[in-house]
Length: 459
Ligand code: FCB
Image (cartoon, rainbow, N blue to C red; front, side, top):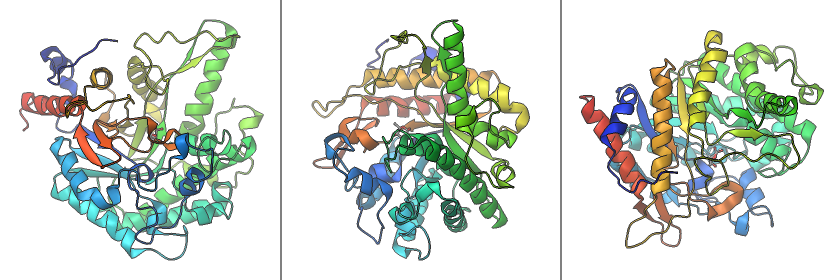
């Protein structure tokens, strides 16, 4: 992989990125509540499944928890200044449901609601568009004890929570997404047990996926009935699935991966049905009459999170992915071309089915960044962002309506079961002192955005 240590964008890159200079295209950074907030027992917040999971011995690297994380709950003002200093247009964050409604039903917590109210105002005061995600994996633990996403009631509780937040923030924020990556909630949380609530039950995971989709549909209906003005949508993690060879087995493996990972969520939303060839095991256990129509709500936008492609080899041992552009600190292949392919695929497969404008709601990479003399040189991350932005620009030039790119993440944070070991930020966090330091990639991102804006005549 080519290494760029310079924090100034090259002229040739700016020319190739011209399709993103449009003032209607937003550059942003993203975070999620449990990964940055801390203040886990403060301000009336109730426990979430991630508090429970991370405090269970053996579930996370080093037993790390999000108790303190980046202490954003206390440092949010300086963090908003940091975001403003990056010169980005937009900030994507999530609301911790147990902070605003500690038990997930019943009483609201005014202190928690006030926190997000002030956060949104703080962003607007700094000229930054707020993009809200309602569920980034931190279900109130009290609801888990009643069956969590395995029971339908949770979908109805979620819709009431969405309605409440929509009413509070819907006239000030630039978008509201119901879920972040429901595939992860369902399958990493309930089939593989890698994420909270740490269950390993295939049938349950499938039912959970259905209830998540149902809760999305119910939430959209509730917010629209209430007159919420912000664009409403959902965020899905997607990857193109590539067969290692032309063999029938590899081709079948790739088709099956795509169905499970992409179509399982896209088809209900855009076609009102599950993929026909998904196989018996994939069939949701209980689909009530009306569920599919409820899930198939028109979207105002679709958020896509892209990190890597899925490489499918049925051989034993498997044929390894080529990894021409290298592998990141998570062991994920770096494959920028996959982002362009994904955007074009969405357009081709769902464009005639009401596909709304797209946002790249997450894209980024971790590195074992080291602070040296007050600086962090992360040339591989610069190249990662650069190459993925070029992929977005190519897709836009080919007619795909992509409206934004959010780098994951604003700052190093609690990376779920990997704890604090993986650093995705363009801002370095020293967890002992909570000092934030801009990495070279942050300077490059800021300089690139500024140069594109200057070149397009919009300051
Ligand atoms: C995504 C998650 C996000 C972060 C990145 C690395 O799947 O949405 O919270 O963990 O991966």
